[in-house]
Length: 355
Image 1 (spheres, one colour):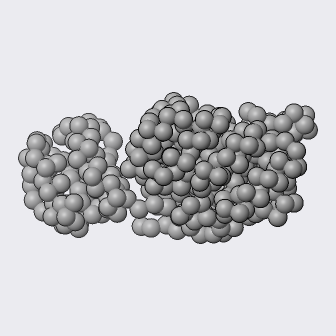
Image 2 (cartoon, helix red, strand yellow):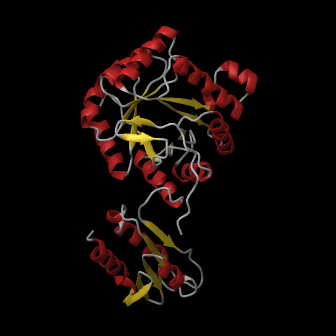
Image 3 (cartoon, one colour):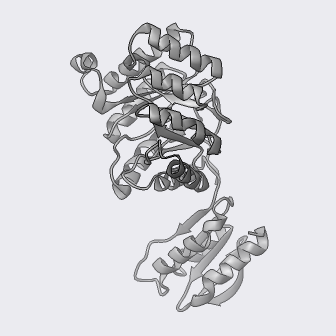
């Protein structure tokens, strides 16, 4: 059953060819971990991220060499490109000149009012939005002294940057208030969402290694997205960035905010007479090329709940002893030997969708 979340209607901005906020679909972001100046390696990783489902990619711009490389990267990049810049307004100006679609830069950290004005003028001229990104680990000293590391502190830090841009009549921005603590992150975004109508970029910063980081991100972003908060997301992992994208897709699909292949499989137990773990892994691997199909495939281990769940899915397998039943559209298709189940399932889906 499709459950619709009442999403907060935020101000809409455009990042390259993607709309953010204002009811647009939640978009998936990631960040390259290559040296940006190494154009070949950076573009190779961007291509891999795009194929995995990444819709917005961010690259670190540490110096002029990185900024100069952006022109070539932009030509070879098929998704919106965001330059991540800290402190140096000249790098922001170079990034804009070289064709980036967005900036991640905090205006309060790049110097004088004149420097900020130059960046804002250039961004306005090119229609480039700016993301204000506040992290719990790098709050200004004045904020820490007054609020400590708290939701109020993160939000006040973000609002200070917002105020700088609004005074320059710049409103094409999105905001983030990331923390490595899941409860702090959730409360900070809730608080910020009450204060502004700008689109919000969700993320748990320094979430950790693949296993723990995905769990933290799912808990935090799942909570907020189910409350209608969030317009873009990044699952920040100490892992291959492609894993970030795959995890983000699964989070959105679990919340029914994104269409795609949904594999339902039961936990193993003493009733299972089929190698369910291996079977499910084989199904997942075999259906990788069908990942964009909006279908549910059930892989069930026994006759207790299996047939019911399999009949609810678009396609399904219910295991027995060395064999299983193949389902499609709620009907039993045939009985199949265990070793042939995956092959027959794939054949059935390909016959229906031509994949």
